[in-house]
Amino acid sequence: MKAVTFLRSAALAALASSLLGCALNASRIVPGSSAADVKALAGSPSEQRPLAGGLKAWYYVMGPEGWTTYRIRLDANDRVLDVEQVLTEGNFRARLTANSTTRNDVLESFGRPALVTRFPNLAEEVWTYRYREGTREYLNDIHFEAATGIVKSYSLYPDPAYNVYLA
Figure 1: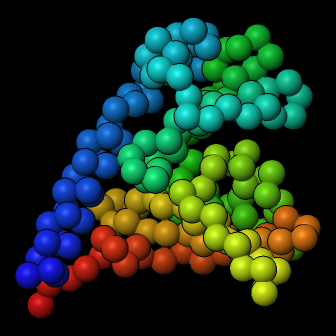
Figure 2: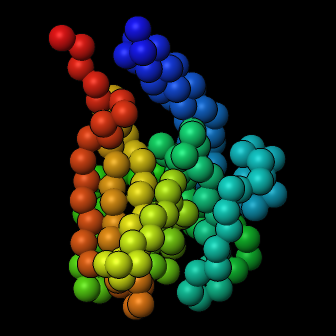
């Protein structure tokens, strides 16, 4: 009985998050739009970060613990440069390099993670991002060296909470 309740809860959570993920109509936000236009269409961002060269990034985290994160980059005049759904396998593979990528690089690329776990005995910190590829849910655990904040490794794998098969 508990398994059925868990599966029902997981299915409802997946449905709710997919509906929330549709809440931001990113296609309506086009390059050249003003910051005021973005706020009128999408509301206030979940997070804002300054980028190099006077640029800014606004992050819109959609769904519970962020299945989808839209990053909107704005120029120094508060005009949209681009809009991108950043939580994809392709982006993780392209933007993460062991022994090179920093915590700040990860924050600029993907926004805040869904979960941060610290392992003092290993001198390691792990950031977990949740994302979807098609209709499947995945996790990406990014392992940082705690002292330097440099990426040691990362692992992409199916989210066990949502990839349960019934026999």
